[in-house]
Length: 268
Image 1 (cartoon, one colour):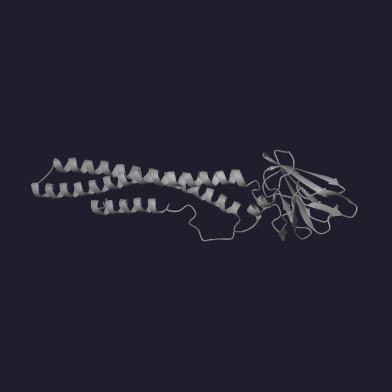
Image 2 (image 1 turned 60 degrees about the vertical axis):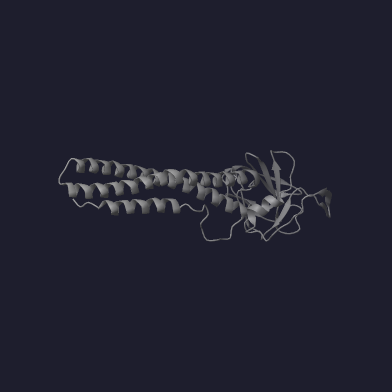
């Protein structure tokens, strides 16, 4: 059986430890791509989670290998102590001591550095998770083919044959037939009104969204994030194709959705 000399084996172990540790220098070590802030945070959370799992798996395997190597070297030391000529014994003992020293140092470095890197990765993951829980009300852009997102919540609406009222959402301009997506997991249902035309609601665990002026409905009932629940139209009191988009936190009154739309729709 071919055996690898102690100095070569130890060098390989040291290299493996270095590769494990340097492979996790940055959470988002990827080329810059066009993405929204919500997509960016989701990517950062996913990257940190994946790196935590990989680092735990690889470092555990490397720690087992290093401990096994130390045990083998200790066995070699004992065998050398019970054998042959003094000159051979001295050279063998010196080689074994050097190999044990390098391997023990690699193990100590691994045991010291991996917890530090795990703490950094867990902090990055938790920060991304906190941001998503706080700001990512909309997990995807509800109208990905939008041409304009109007910051018009609260403005007075005065149209012919329409009662004067205060605007309760943001108008998202888009071509007729552009898909409208469920911005989170929930339950979607359709309705109709004179002002809103064809309408679709999606209720999630933090409230519901209301979309008006649809040309037709998409999937209704229980939906997943990103499912098409309708299509942009010009029904109701609309003067041009758009999605009148409202956000109702905790199923109460309408709240300004503009910045949530920006975070979910506009690339940074």
